[in-house]
Every structure is written in structure tokens, then in C-alpha cells.
Image 1 (cartoon, rainbow, N blue to C red):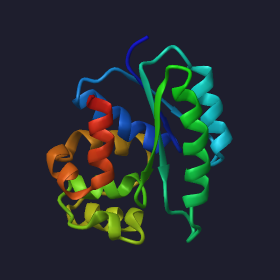
Image 2 (image 1 turned 60 degrees about the horizontal axis):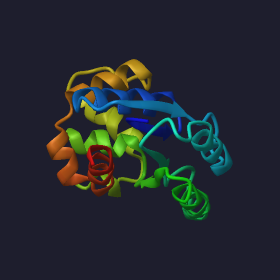
Image 3 (image 1 turned 135 degrees about the vertical axis):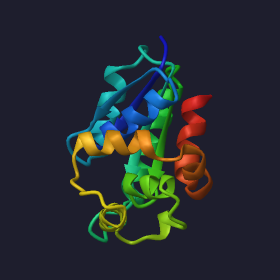
Image 4 (image 1 turned 180 degrees about the vertical axis):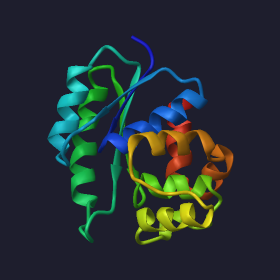
Length: 167
């Protein structure tokens, strides 16, 4: 039993987190949910029970103006049950989305307050003279280019993620 299991929402999130983990030289397995239901994340955690020291579920709090707080609270409640079974697990609400973390790493101030971080990332890339396509390859490359220390200072949720991953 070693390393960290990380559950994300989709393939671009998976690629970005993989790039960050590689930079930090952290052993982890990253799985995406293929859907947005807390039960899926919980099932994934139970499948890998006993194979990892700890697990974290990253959950975006934005999506089409819908408040995700009840979903996140329900998932957090289910995950607490795993602690009783010797799995250190946590759900981490990602304020807005993974794109806010990227923006923080590109030194954009207050990235978690931006209403549409994906659109802002597209604009930031264009300002840098780069073409933006939302793809796993681009997100993994961005993970290797961002300033992790700067991202931690500008995004509380990114800092929480790195702290959990590192300890």
C-alpha cells in the first residue's frame, strides 16, 4: 500500500494532475469518473481500497451556474466512512475548475474568482501567442510550464491539493 489515488472529473484534469505529480515526483494513480455523480467517485475509492495510502477526489464547484455544494457534501460524507476502513481519503472542492489552478500558475491574480476560468485560460494563451485547445496533451504541457509556488500562493485549493499530496 503506497502512493496516492486521485479521482478527477475528466481526461484533461487527469492529464494536468499527472503532469503536476510528475514534476513533484509523487507516486499516484489518477482515475477519472466519467460522470459527475458522487456514487461513482465512492465506488472508485472502494475498488482501490487497501492499494493506496491515501486518496483525494477533486470536484469542480462550477458547472452551468449550478451549485455543487450539496453534491460535494454528500460525497464528503460518504468518504468519511472510508476513514473507518483505514483509507485516508478526502474530497477537495476545486474553486471553479482546474483551469483556475492553471491560471494561478500563470500568475493571474484571483483565479478562483473568475467566473469562466476556461474562457480566461483561452484568452491568456492567445495573449502569449499560443493556440489553445482543451486536450489532455495541452493540459499536461501546461502542468509542466506553470509556476507551482505561484499557483499555491494564488489558489487556496491548489495549495490544499499540493499539501495533501505531499504529506
